[in-house]
Length: 177
Image 1: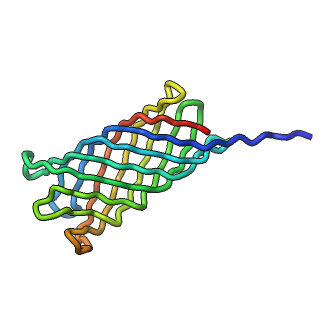
Image 2: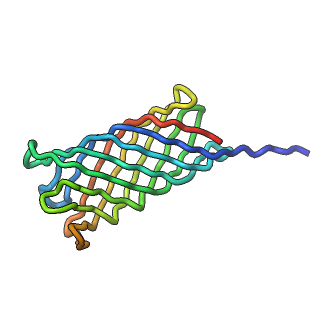
Image 3: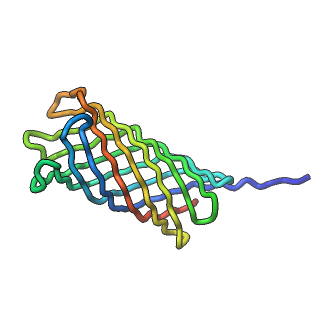
């Protein structure tokens, strides 16, 4: 009788990175560029086949410059959570896709009160290389969409959705248990 032993682990992967990108209100001239730091975390199940699947968490602190006035800066705070699915085809090289379904961007330094973009979704693709077994260098691209905003206490359905495109470089620390 031949018996194959199954091998699977739990993957915990905290990370830190730098993001640059652009936000636009679709169909208008409203928009701008941003850059800043972000923290991420991933908790996944690693399967024997090289596939990993689990949950993903991200939080950003970004500084923006609007298109109309390069001297006007404001900050953006983002928090998102979702699912991730990835694959390790060869040792040390990884690819993944993440769908973020709980998502909000807050602009705390708005002129009147905090403005929050809510009910957002995001699609993130990434590639990582582990030159050292416990450090991964990652490149990711994300696209966020928002169709609701909250100004003060009122939820507003946006006439024109917001789109946010982000390019990220990060270091993460994958730990298998």
